Image (cartoon, rainbow, N blue to C red; front, side, top):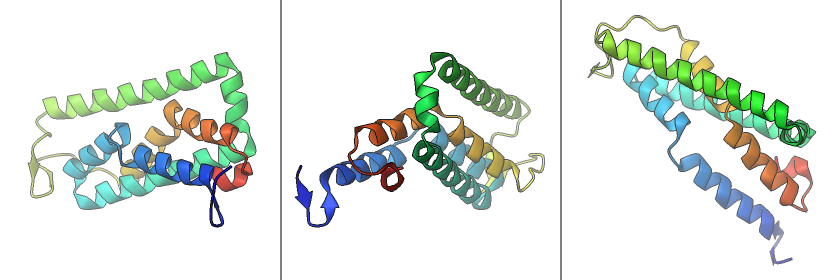
Length: 155
């Protein structure tokens, strides 16, 4: 095993991969863009922080081995994917309905004539979109299972 000083090569690989996953656009990125357009910079930042909190949940679940149980049970993982897909569909439908009502054009950082959104809405949407994302569960577990490092250091 190649060592870089005190840092394990697998840990460096993990950091590179998780960084690429974090900066690549996906559902979370689209949600941040939508919430920023809907409620301004405050909602965008709040959504980003909630997404990061969701990553901590994935890390904790992986460290405890719960993700491994989920991946070993085809039925449980399938149900998890359906719940996640259902939530994403709900977010999409509500966005389309808001656009149809004319609440889709940003004016000065917020949507014109858009109904007020509670301060907790971006938190809820960001957190749930990340926690219910099965791709993130699989990603965290892939690194936990393939590493010789203790799971608590990786996950």
